[in-house]
Structure formats: structure tokens, C-alpha cells
Length: 264
Image (spheres, helix red, strand yellow):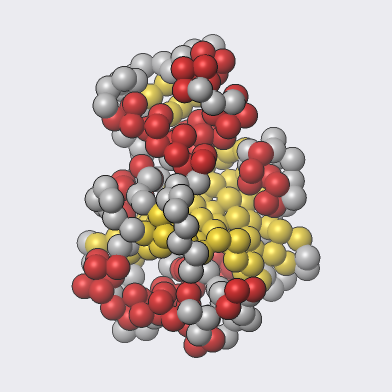
């Protein structure tokens, strides 16, 4: 597992700067953010980098784009979605088998997304996995997955904690039969590890679906233009009342159909 000196990806660091400004009242609920050129100048960043961070903030429900008004700050993100605890590569890989290609396996501090969905305190260390799902040589989805802090997992789901450590060490058993990727990282998603470790543990999940655009960085990772329409699926998996995994899955136009089970 790579643990470098830099604890946040640049787009995440910028995301957090804006999210912090929302939470400390610089941009209160209902307010409109400055225009992109003005905000980029205030933050000392490029407009493309700012646009990537704003896109993530919109997807996570902190901002809403209103035609003729601009980006406004929301009160709280809405709860929407479907419930189905099954790895994404199995859900959308029924016709063409998908393989998981690991892009990044690291530890990072909580973002606003993981603070909200994993209830992670400031300064916590969370495992972060970034993966591309590919079928027949074509990338079809990008997954970002975070696990709750080790002390939480050791308390509520020690089997998952052990399976994650084994997966990062390159254990074939942890990969549920998947092929190993470069660097001894198993070709498996974090959710697949969780499901495989939960044969005796009940899981529940809540997910949301949002329409968005890929953006430049994710477009590069998936081999698509930045303005490609996409569906963003956010997912939180719990053991009892405790969240143990949070994920964001990006599915661009052309991805195999995703079956949705909506519960009431």
C-alpha cells in the first residue's frame, strides 16, 4: 500500500478548501458562489482545476447549478437511491466479464464526503482505493472506495479489516479468486473484499444516483472526452448502524446497463 507524504490529491485538497468555506459560513446555505474567474483568482488556482473541484462538490450535494444564477450552496444533500449490496463489477458485468485494474491503493485523511458518510473524525486515516473496471480492453467505470478507520473496522467487522490487510499484501484468498495486479495488489474491488468477508455478517446499503459529466481527469482515466455524460453512483455500506465503506462509481455513456432495485 503506497503511503506518501502527500495525504490529499490536488483536486481533493481544492474541494476541501471550498467545502471548508461552505462549512465556516464564508458561503452560507442559499448563497451563490463567485463566478469561476473570480473564485479561481481568489483561490489562486487554474480554472480547469477549479472546475474539477466544483464538479465533485455538485456531485456530493454541496452545490447546485441554477440556470441564470450560478452555483448555489445547498442546505443538506438529499437522500436518494437504491439498495443492493453487490460489487459493481458483478452488477454490470453479467454479459461481458469485467476485470478490476488498480490505479491507486493508499491511505488519506477524510474528505468532506467521507466525513459525512463514514463519520470519520479529522485526522483519521482511511484506506482509499481507486480502480478502473474494464471489459474487452475498454474501460467502462471508475470506482473510488474508502473504508472506515481501522479501529472502527476492528470493532464492528474484524473479518473485513483482516481481509483488507490481506488484499493490500497481495493475498490471493482476499481477492476472491481474482487475478493479481501489478505491485502484488489483487485485481478486486474493496466492495468485493467486504462482501467476501461478510458471510456471517449482515450488511445494509444506501446509494444515490446523479447525472454528471466526467471531467478532465476522470475522462483521461476512462479514455473519454471531459464532457462525456455520466452517471455517478454513491454508496454507503453499513454493519448495523455503523458505516464501514463509502464509494463513488462513475459510469460514462456506453457502460453496460446497471440494474436498480428501489426500496420504499
